Image 1 (cartoon, one colour):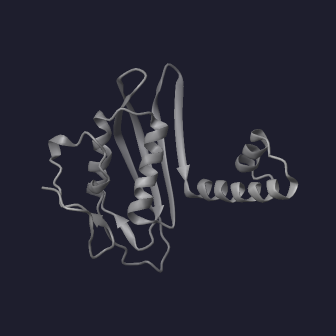
Image 2: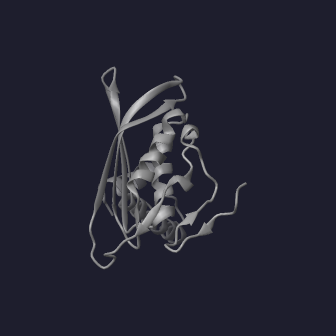
Length: 176
């Protein structure tokens, strides 16, 4: 029997549906638990490394291994580490591209604890001389949102669209 999600005393939405350990084959957001930050007025960073991350690559149907690094500055809530480990472990039989997975992890953590700053980074084990790193950072997200707003204002004023290459150059190199 599953009940609706209800806020607990710490502001997290919790589900009373039990997901058995043997069925952690999907990264359910309700696996993530949190607790109150006892020092919300003191900015500090929390860094978590998860070195045994695995998932199934859709194009090859093979397991890939990666290291996931999560860094955040908590606001009112902190992530409970054991639940984060269970959440990340749940990806082991999940089939998706690493780019999608990293963005999903970022979004799930943002939705769960609303940190002041969040960075999720994945380093894929090198294969055939190719390494892959994916980083989603709230600074990038905020910069992108600001550039989009500015581009929309420029387009209205100038009545001309900014070329994608110019837009990306502004984002990645900070050129105004």
